[in-house]
Image (cartoon, rainbow, N blue to C red; front, side):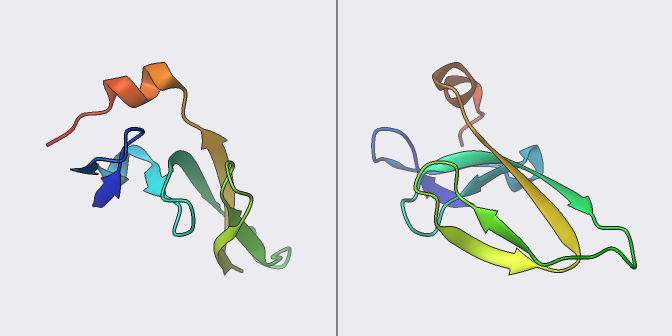
Length: 79
């Protein structure tokens, strides 16, 4: 996946590490996705922890989004 890093430089990051890019502010954040229990499902929004805007919604999964610390950001593997 291509994304802008903290310095505004386009780089490639790995989605399988739970790192996603906000479609509004283009900042990286960590995301944990868990399936909802059938019968107790509610629509859940994928809210960016930085700009607080929605990046989609789902009735099948819950989104847990976290800010990436500068230490974690520097440890991300870049291609």
